[in-house]
Every structure is written in structure tokens, then in C-alpha cells.
Length: 245
Image 1 (cartoon, rainbow, N blue to C red):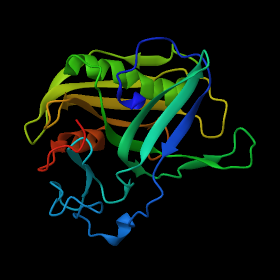
Image 2 (image 1 turned 45 degrees about the vertical axis):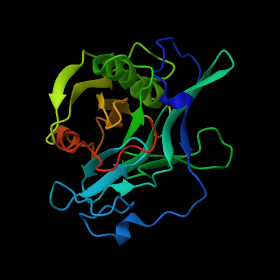
Image 3 (image 1 turned 90 degrees about the horizontal axis):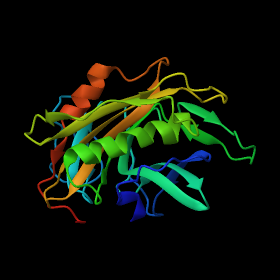
């Protein structure tokens, strides 16, 4: 899929919009499961943190844990942002996402009669088939969450540093990097500054993938950095190999 390629570094200069894609198959209600059970299959998967729940992505062979108040989407859901440039659509997405307050802010900015909801925070994994190493995968991916979701078309307010080595609790080694926005023009009801973190690593098939979390910054109920780091620490591989290599 195009959204699994590492984006190039070209400027994107037209309007961005949230994108959500999913199949028509019914999804079990995550709230029907126990706190530490995986509500999306992955039988026997238990959260590594008491009271949290497992987010499994069989497509890329990854799992991570989120607090009990997060909502978990189906594994066939793709969510993120897309924008157009020179008549072509570009995007950045994750699959099998988890949300904190999926309807944190709802508005109809384009006045088409359809309400659009913005989540307070979103986390998920994706493939990075164009990457040559974990540093490149992380550094290439992380700014697009800020640009696509919070600053577009302004690139000057996107701030990020360099990737650093990181090892999860389960022993996965890779590269982690953070990004945020500063001084972004606030026009709409749901506009805010944004923050993001990307952890790049190799999955069980030896392919580069990234775990990503992005959300609103400087708002009430913003995800604390300690919680972000705790979620990141739980990233691990599934026992079953990835369904897509």
C-alpha cells in the first residue's frame, strides 16, 4: 500500500484532512472484554501492565498496551491524515489504532453537514518499507503526524530533533524520536498544538515498522509524558509471525 512507503521529504502545501478507512465487518465492543484481555483476537495475549489492555496488529506482528480508558479499533482500520499536492494525494496512517477520547472534539469545518471528530490522542503501528534503517524510518515518519494533523500548510511550526537508541521492556531495539508544534495558527474549534512520538524497529519478518502516538498538546487532559513513555515501553512482537511482510 502507498501508505506503507516511507514518505519522501517534499513539502506538502494543501489542506490536510483526517482519514479513516475500515472494512464493513462488524467489530466487537472493546468494553465487553476484561481489562487485561485483548479485545481483538490474539488469543491468550495479556497486558504487561495491570489494568491495561492489549492492542494487537497481526498485519505487522506487533502489540502494545494502553490504559483501560483508551478505545481500541478493529485490526482492519487505518487512520491518519491525508492531503493533496499537485493533484496527488499523500497520507500518513497507522493501522489497528487505539484512541484516547475518540470524540474529544467534534465539528463540521467544511460545512458539508457531516460531523468530523478529532481524538485527543491516537496510537498504532505501520510499515516502513522504504526505510534503510531505524533512524531513517523514525526521522522520516514523525514530522508528518504534526504536519498532517496540526500545522498544515505551515511547516515552520513543526519541531523535531534526532532519533535516539531505545530498547523496550521486551528487548526490542530501535530508534525513537519526538516531534511537536509551536506557534501554529489556531483557526478552527478543534485546532490545537500537536505532539508525536515514533519508535522504529524490525518486526518478526525482519521488516522495518514504526509504532506511533500523536495527540493534542497544551490542552486539558493532554496525555502525560509519563503515560506516553509507559505505553512505548510495552511495544513488543506477537508470537505469531506478521501476516504481511
